Amino acid sequence: MATIIETRGLTRHYGRQTAVDRLDLEVREGEIFGFLGPNGAGKTTTILMLLGLTEPSAGSARVLGHDPVLDPLPIKRQVGYLPENVGFYDDLTARENLQYIADLNAIPRAEAARKIESALATVGLGDVGDKPVGAFSRGMRQRLGIAELLVKDPRLMILDEPTLGLDPDGTLKMLDLIRDLNRSRGITVMFSSHLLDQVQRICHRVGIMIQGRLVAVGTIEELARRKLGDASGPSLEEIYMRYFKEG
Ligand SMILES: Nc1ncnc2c1ncn2[C@@H]1O[C@H](COP(=O)(O)OP(=O)(O)OP(=O)(O)O)[C@@H](O)[C@H]1O
Image (cartoon, rainbow, N blue to C red; front, top):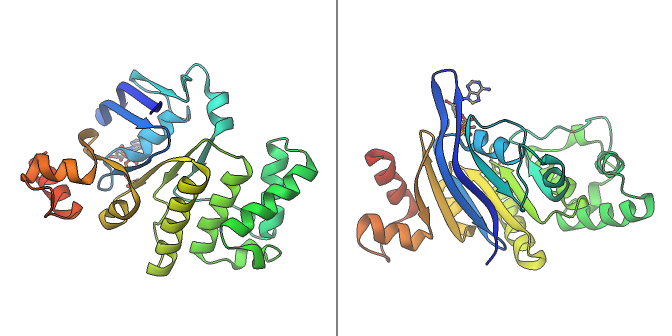
């Protein structure tokens, strides 16, 4: 499987604080990778460095074969990024918001119209495409955020806490959507979360960040075996607590 994200010694300091500490990370094409860690672990900072939105203090990264510091444009073009707080124009409808994004990406009108219809249907917002986004629930806004990414036809989606603030139903819908997009379109997904059960539900592999350091990477089974000596028993929550406590 090809490597789609790779970092070597990736580091970011803020003043005296090290937000990301010599990170070696690999995400493979076709997988759903869960980037897990408590608040302040360095997940968002890592994501921003992968996208060329924040410069590393040391180390390097390659995303889809490009260096985010030297060559960020092809990354921005091919990666769909959902930030923790998605911004929309509240007085525009869902369709109009997506049209705006399509225009920004210079997608011809006829092609954009097709992509927008398909994206709205895929995320389950086909019926409310003409409603102003100001009236949308947080779950609907998050799904519209995914629709926005789909209009760009990304090879890779990087989602920062995509289920934050969603109720249980909204959370399930979002996770199912992520899994469907991965399965049916082969889109590689990296998503960050501090909610363990979610990651466990849909991720092929996970990485656990604690205080800027990646303390473990693997499938849930591998992590369970390594830390607890038993592949069948523990939940990710137990694994996470072990790593969290022991560092
Ligand atoms: N622009 C900044 N200036 C100063 N410190 C920052 C900045 N951005 C992040 N930090 C610090 O770096 C550390 C890592 O933050 P980061 O947002 O990457 O963590 P996170 O894992 O994404 O957490 P959360 O889930 O809360 O977003 C935190 O201690 C944070 O306070």
